[in-house]
Length: 156
Image (tube, rainbow, N blue to C red):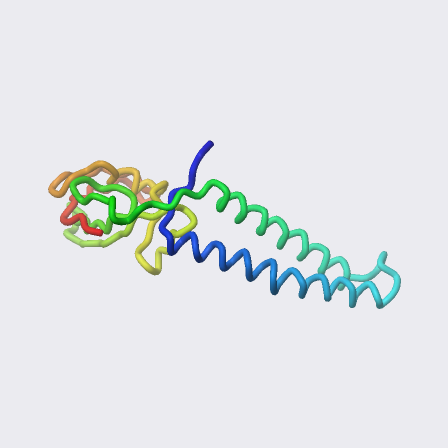
């Protein structure tokens, strides 16, 4: 069984999303289905078909999120170390070729958000950085080609 490691914050967001889907969106779709059904002939009722399709997508998403939640393991953030790169670390790296610095926080798949600088531990960059120390270089194959990143800082 594969666990999904996440922060308490990520876990709480997932629970809130499931509650929103089940408590707000599910009843709304049920109302739309009932309304479309009241309009008569279901064989040629596009509104009914659309609402049923939306219901199927919603139920699939709820099921998927509940699966993630069932396998979730909350990481005790106080036990996270900074001697080597690991999940929940904030890592400052420098592109050896052009000197550009980037900062990433390594998180679980469900918490990844590139706009916030949070990347999944399952991305090529994160996999290349895992286990490295400050000063180490990681050679990473990305879609844009091979990059060499030097670890400048590891923090929480």
